[in-house]
Length: 267
Image (cartoon, rainbow, N blue to C red; front, side, top):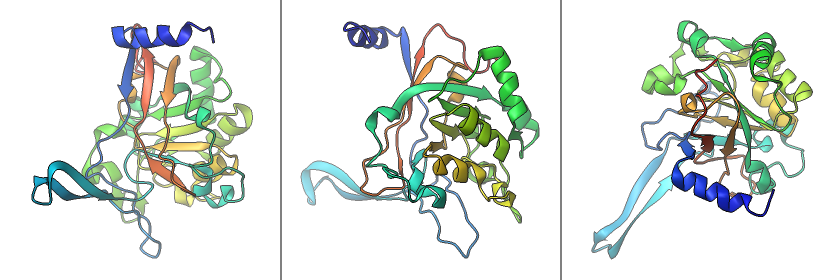
């Protein structure tokens, strides 16, 4: 990077030539969390308790105690989150090198298919067709699957039925292609997990989690505003909280987008 590049970037952001897009949902007690079969432990929703509010408990300040799971709201998955990544070095959020939290991102638009098929899955063929138009996915990129699922809320967002959740996600072969042949940095979705809602029925169960974290890759889920990102050319900023031995973390995901580019709606 040239010595002048960082000041130029700061000026481009200030002038609006480069936009900062917030890809994060607001944390509140009503935001849905993943629901596992009852025999397993459950992810905690966000909770906030007022400590004081410029009153007798603290006359000049306002603050809160909060509680939540590492995997509540828009959040980051570290390799240690999954059994396949438990023995890898530097596998927790506090041990991951900080430079990997900033990097290039591509967006694969699956909104049309997901609008008519709640169980729509990203396949290797769809990835390769996307590459024919936008170019091969560069190594060390984040790959985000856009479905517009983030526009749903409440029960519709989780879409639970007797056989579990129904929401879009990747097939095992798609994740293996992205890891083994494209060497991506991580994979992100607008749904509550990086896997399809019915991902438990694959072998191995939840293949996106299993293969990503076993390869030392990362996950992002519950993303929003992916319709504001171009297919290529944006930069993702996704640093989790530095939690000792943390398997994941809520975070505020941002993207730097050239103002003149088209959104990912341009398929």
